[in-house]
Image (cartoon, rainbow, N blue to C red; front, side, top):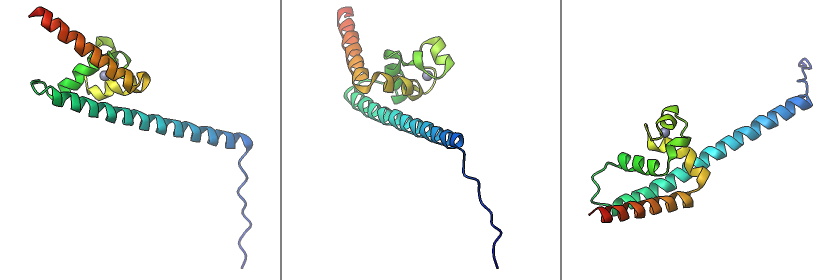
Length: 128
Ligand SMILES: [Zn+2]
């Protein structure tokens, strides 16, 4: 018994190019997402260490994160229109930081936070 001779037509050059393009885009998207998550993880870790040092702070972890997100002006580039409009984090701070952190890099983010904290501490001393 023989099978009917069925041949699948070879994909055209443009079809192959389209598939390769989709594949590349998918891979770039995956890597960008992985990078964002890595940076967020590292940032979370640093925030946890800073929060541990500030044992006097009565703010919840989420409030602390939101405070840091606002100190970095992360809301201005947030995907949520409400955050951008009000220029302050209105939801989950991680969402606000997801765009900003990979864009400016972890080093700069931490440097800015440290700088802002120094400045606010200086003000507090002057006020007292
Ligand atoms: Zn936001």
